[in-house]
Length: 128
Figure 1: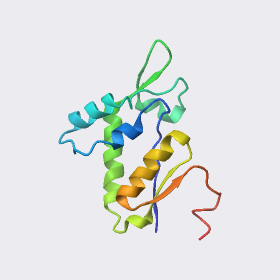
Figure 2: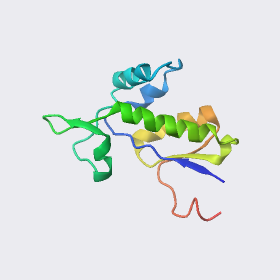
Figure 3: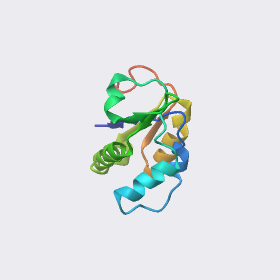
Figure 4: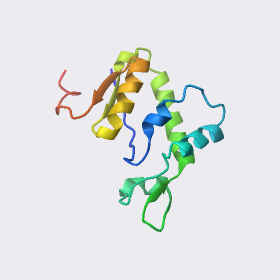
């Protein structure tokens, strides 16, 4: 059995900087503060209808500001799902976007998960 974690990252955010923090934050407020410093709350001008509930507001320029409280909650749900898997090699971390590939590679290096950075063939998960 394999688990797949899919996290959308906006191209304007510095996800790699967020991955560099070695100190675990104790509270939700500290985590949200680190996400603010890394500018992960900045989205793009276009917004998919499925992301509307995670948008805090829209700036005058048309940039969507992501609600970091809801983002933190979803990250905690994903972390609980990952921790519940006994064998780290059963986890696949995937990103087809170039700005997410470094974060995928670093995460998989530290956790022992399988990285799939960049494009991958259809049927990779279903054709065993």
